[in-house]
Image 1: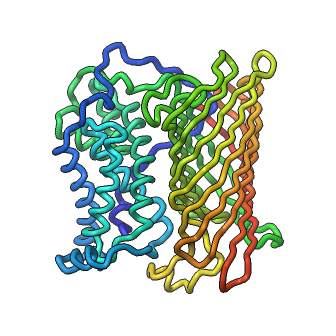
Image 2: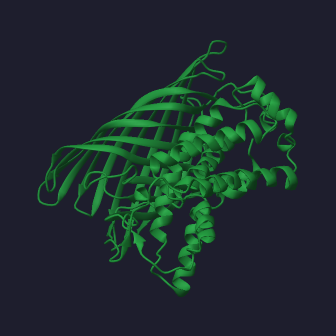
Amino acid sequence: MKTLGMILLCVAGPLCIRAQQTILIEPDSTTSLPADSVGTGQFGPAVRDLLLSELAPYSIDRWITKQPWARTSLRSWGDNLKYGWEWDTDHFVVNQFAHPYSGNMYFNSARSNGFGFWASAPFALAGSAIWEYFGETTRPSVNDIINTTLGGISLGETTYRLSGMILDDQSTGTERMFREIGAALINPVRAFSRLLRGETGRVGPNPIDRLTGMIHGSADIGYQRVDEGPKNAPARGPNQGFANFTLVYGNPLEGEVANPFGAFLLRLTLATSRALTVSEAEAEGLLAVDDLKKEERSNQRLALIMHYHYFNNLAFENGGQGFSAGLMSRYPIGESNSLYTQVFLTGFAIAAVKSDYATDLAALANETARNYDFGPGAGGVVSVQFAYGDLWFLELEYEPFWIGVTSGMSRDQFFQVITSQWQIRVFDKLSIGERDFLYLRTGHYDTHPTSHTRDVILQAFLSWAF
């Protein structure tokens, strides 16, 4: 139930930009060892930053907003240790966004103090466990520790690398000031660690892994129509403005991925219907790759990916943490055109999906009930993209998923997402495009009729690459 306290800290969440244009970046001429090579890290400062990451939202919740569940005591700690774990009824945005974001802070407590990716992962788990036992009067939550740990690792490594791109220890003056501020907005834990170490103004070498060889970025601004309801219902829904930002870090088809998340995707979408709150957030990073075929324009690569996703809009509501394994390919067509394909199998450690038969609105508002179900699941992704040089592209994607509900109203849920997109470059960095989503969901219930829903999002946009 880390509501307002954590949401106040979430406003400086990950920056995400969408891209079709490639920006090549050369490593710095003067560099130090990469962060993954700094021994086992500084354990004391990492624990200090972890505890401060717990105390900051706790202090807001207990003494400023005076949340009743934050009035912990020796008795509540004893009860939590005695009675153990349960499934909570927090709002969707708290469980699926705020908790993973807090896990990102726990992860970065270690990552920002010299620990590598794998050594930082247990800090996300430890931070979640500390909060669940001692940060609330309510019993520890099964869904929270999974969401916070796995979502925190995915978001944590992406925000760590993104803040590293912005920082430049060789810069000075006004440029240095704005770089430090920008990195602090994305990764406040790292900024705090740098401040205590006296690094915010110190001129020196940069880590050799500070910059990758390729960055893709763009921002999409446009209009969308959302139609939601039963499968055979007439089209209806609001007209909305939206902004989509995406960052593609590294090239997942080329180059070495020496460390986890050496290539990753980060995406954020805002829509006006929800007062410019986050309606979509995704973080996907490569954990390991194996090249089956590697030529100048033709590639086939097996990949293992860790991912976090969050969708909370008027068309559909789901989120989850898991892993995908599959094949990415690129085939040349003519002298400058290419066909890109992806085939992945996906497993969710835990996923949340909207339920059709929720309890009354008062129970939902008071967080004594949920309007979504929890459970593990599996599915896949098949996508095809044809690129006509760098002038235009057309992409189709199909994603089927099954969720076996462990906590919620339904027995299981099956949903399919069909996405189509085209984009045409009209000027050097400006493109126009259209993106459509068809979301089909079937929910099976023991005490209610089977439900079938059909939701649609239609988007038209301008895309600015940078």
